[in-house]
Structures are given as C-alpha cells and as structure tokens.
Image 1 (cartoon, rainbow, N blue to C red):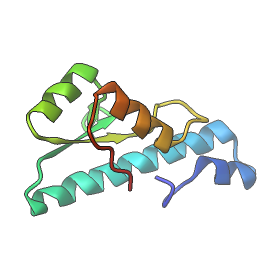
Image 2 (cartoon, rainbow, N blue to C red; image 1 turned 90 degrees about the horizontal axis):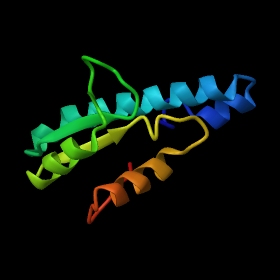
Image 3 (cartoon, helix red, strand yellow; image 1 turned 45 degrees about the horizontal axis):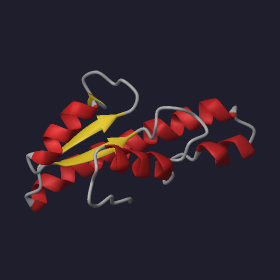
Length: 108
C-alpha cells in the first residue's frame, strides 16, 4: 500500500504513526483488490485475505482456508500486513509465506 499511503512517511509529516500505519494497511487492501480484479483476465483464480476484518470487501485471513485455497491452485493475496502497526508488509509477506509453506512469495 506504500504507493498510496506509507505509515512511516505520514508520521514524518506529523500524523500519528498508528493512524498512518492503519491507512497503509487499508491502502494495501486496495492494492490487493485491484490485483484480484486483474488476475482473472490472465486466467488466474485469486482470493484476497486481509489481516484486518473488512466484511463484504474481502475475506479475513484464516490459516486453514489459505492452505486449502493454495492446495487447490488458487493465488492467495495477503493484504493489510500483519494487522499491527509498526510492521512492514514485507515482514508480513515473509511471515505468511513461511506459515503456509509457500514455495514462492511474490511482492509487488
């Protein structure tokens, strides 16, 4: 979500760091939704999972659901980082990749 909002950058501009990080998480979800919308045009079935609940927008992260989706050949897009301020989305992508034993983790 750093292309839209970056929490650390907003904090440098005077915004509360936690609020800035929350904006970064939401912008990360926006990027995930855009990816999910684009991937079917390349014949890729994808699902967005968020570390923060956004009912009606995307699914909440659930380890068992992620394992099932991944085993069925779907791309799982993790969004909103870890759901906690002060952690980068890169940290979250690495963490989630290890958690689901992914062979590849792509970061855009």
